[in-house]
Image 1: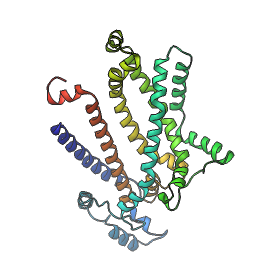
Image 2: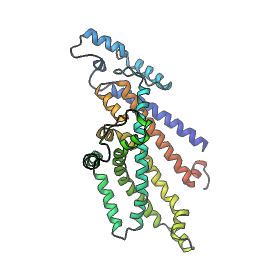
Image 3: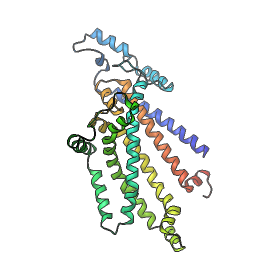
Image 4: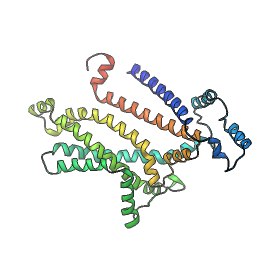
Length: 321
C-alpha cells in the first residue's frame, strides 16, 4: 500500500505539471492582448508596450513559463493584472462559497440517491420502481440552469421564503444567513446529481440482488437485511464509489453555471471575469486549483475503493485477499 500511495502521488504531481503546461500554452493562443485590460480605448503604442512590460507579456514564452512554474512550486499563483491582488488570496476568498456549495450539494444528492436507487432496484416489480427510474432519467435530461430558474420562480419570487441569489457580505460570520443563501443553489445541484446517481445505485443494486453469494447467504438462514449488510453492501459500494468521485469532481467544475444563475461570488464567477478581462494569472490560478481538486478527488475515490474491496488490496500486494 505504501508503494501504491507513492506511485499515485507521483502520478498526481505529474498530471498537475502536464495540466499546468497545457493551460499555460493554450491561454497564449487566445485572441486578444492581456495588456489591453490595463488600458483604456485608444491607447498609444508606447502605452501598450509599457503595459506589456509591466505584466511581463513581452518576455519570451519559456521565460514566462519558468517564472510562473517557479511561483507555482512555491504555492504562489501570481498577481492579478487587473486587481493587482495575489491570485491565491482571491481564490481563497472565493472557495469559502464554492467548497460549501459543492460539499453540501454532494451530501444531499447522496442522501437522496442511495435509498431511492436501492428502492428502484429492490421494488422493480412494483409500479413505483419504474416510476423512480423514469424520474431519474428525466432529471438527467433537464438543464441545471433551468431547474435553478424554476426554483427561484417558485421559492423566491412567488413564495418568498428563500433569497433569489447573492451571498452575505460578511460571509460565514452569520452561518444561518449563509446557509439560507446557499439553499436554492444546493438543491439545484443536488437534484441534477441525484438523478444521475440513482441510475448507478440502481444498477449496482440489481447486480448484487442477482448474485449467487447473496442467494447462498439467504439459503443459509441470513435475513435479507443481514445478507445485504454483510455481503451485498460492500460489493455494491465499489462501483458506486468511483461514480461518486466523478460526480463530486464534476460538481466542483460545473459550479460556474449555478453560481452565475444565483449570483454567487464563487470560483466560477472569478473564472468568467478573468476570461473576459484576459487576466492570465487569474485564469491559470483558478484552472490549476480546479485541476488539483479533481485529481485529489480521483485519488481519494481510488483509495477508498481499495479500502472497501479486499480484492484490490490483494492485487496491490500480489497475493490472495
